[in-house]
Length: 385
Image (cartoon, rainbow, N blue to C red; front, side):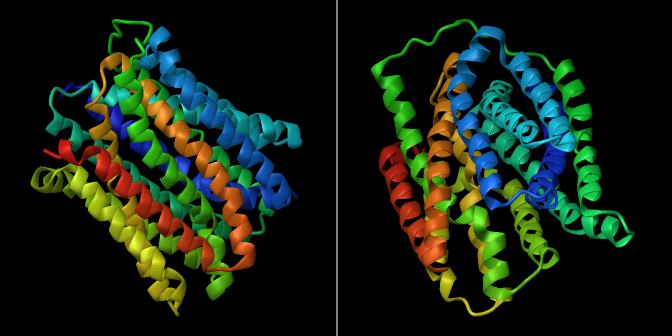
């Protein structure tokens, strides 16, 4: 494992803290600016669709200029989008900001996974590194949720208008780039020998085998996950502070649990670990609408989220082992694009289903999770060892 790996992992984790609390704040900020749900939907759709497009382009760009430069460009665009969101002169300014969010997300995620996987020499080290990176980032997310839940109330409690309070909180998120950009500047890039991928039938089949289950899971997640805070509010009448503790608990336990993942992978194998956890999560969502109290629903949601999400670093690491240096970012980007586009469809579907019933979306998500996990198991169980 190379010596600049800790720099990359820690800087990314710190960045996650600021990313998480700004993500949590954005809907309330837009509401304070006077924008309704229809305008929010437009902005989030622009972000999602742009991210999907740049997931497809991420690998090709990094083949031309390298992983490091691609990540630096993504970070610079991320800083610019934050400035545009803070200024928010008008709706067009916000559109530009959310467009840059999509580019940042699309370029960053697949190239970070590809670069990180190239920094280790064995599969065991790769599983460990991805799990630890995910764990640190998730713990930072947990802290970010609490900041987002309490800081606005503190500022507004001292007489500050909502709009100004949210602008100040978003301004703090610029610290993320003051940490990430210097870290990216000092790490060593991984040389890419070929500037063009040799598309072969077996390569396309491998990418599709990872992308199809991911797309179905993205559809299922899109139906319910963005609406969870609203669900807790509508079903149990809880406020933003109470709800923030649910997401804090989810992120905290998931972050700590990530450090145990490498041992579980070694014991039962990555494919079995992923399928057992995801099937369990799906079953919990089947019973979720019938839970009678906020406390019980919060506990089940936290457990479900941990089971479903904690295995994603294992999934990412497992996938990277199937591709060469030149193929990794493109393969990861295509898989993310499949998931992102389907998640956008799920957002619309979820809105329609929640308008009809508070239970139907959870049943739909559970069925899709079960289908996707069964597909993944069928594709890869022979590679479990």
